[in-house]
Length: 166
Image (cartoon, rainbow, N blue to C red; front, top):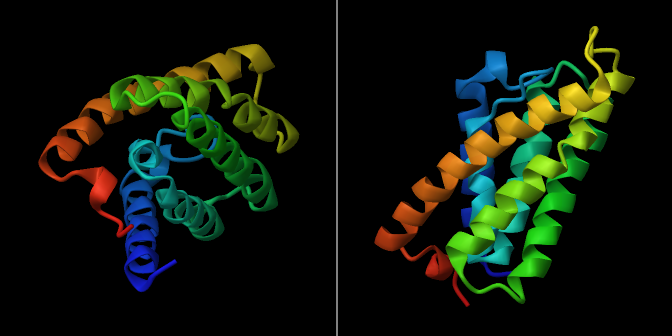
């Protein structure tokens, strides 16, 4: 990995942290509304963005999460699993909008990990697991779908597939 790729991923991690901190009161617990999740679409354009996103999630959870170890295990696992699935599917699906749509569904479906984390941490309240999972998935889907169009518009102006050197 060359220095430009490392620097770009470090910047990406910083942007992820900053966007999450911007909406901090609704970034954890049962809301999990993180506008930084739109950055997950970057792996559609270049799989090497995986590292910046994963590091951003790790550091965000380290500095801001009130759930400590639960968030490290489940939050980071959610991101790594979802990004990995999208990167794998990207080998076969070349249409960027379609892949971003699938990425949105993958991240939303995998919110069962976050619902389970909240259950283990005793943060579910009176909610039924399936209800919390559906609620979290719908929040994630909303952010990711909006993010699809934002990222695609950015891609049209700055070819995101060519930001990192080959």
